[in-house]
Length: 333
Image: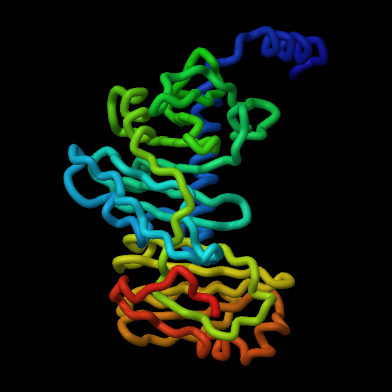
């Protein structure tokens, strides 16, 4: 029988025994957690608000040709309009070989361009543009382990920094942030993770040197007529090629109006319909090689019902076909 004295001795011995070495690498787990969070955001955007991660329509030349060639996009011809549904703030030029897609994504949290490489844990590269400032932006508001800036070689002669959790490790254990000031005073953050290339610092600088910063309207394959004024703030993402279904591209335009989710999903004809959750209603149509689906869920929407529900909204959408020369940067009429 274990007496009180014996129990006390056993507990004291356990307390004084060194703990076994921890198998969990906290730093690596945190980096993975960030990446999983980003991938989940991208997946949710794909299903609910559109897709994040693939190739922007007006700049497909950025991925054409051999990786060793100069693949900077040609200067875009910007239409005279000042308001557009989807606008890229920065575009890639040169990228390491093997890119699977580049996306332009615009929602209430960010406007960015992202590149992905094949594989479930394939390399990702993100471009985000921050406002004009004399100092680099606060990239991560994590109060426990914030990112610190470490001087880096200039990018095209402009000030540049590495953003890292550990100032002794500028490349941040592979979750790399290179931040530099563009000629217009804005700051650009190039974030690359799951990198498959060597000589990481030099490759990051090469990517950064070929980035173009500027407002570039993105053309889309639909027109929407007589849209109620309540539809004034959309999350939009254009993906090339499709991420969750085969196809040359995917476009999602998503609204949250008084708790209701209203999403317009556009894909080439012949692909699977835009996905729905259990509580959503949907209407779809195909015309001129383009499939359009309207989803509604989460809460009633009087404004949607006032135009005939999902079918009424669908009837206001016109396909512009697969010929991208017919697409428009101003689809809302």
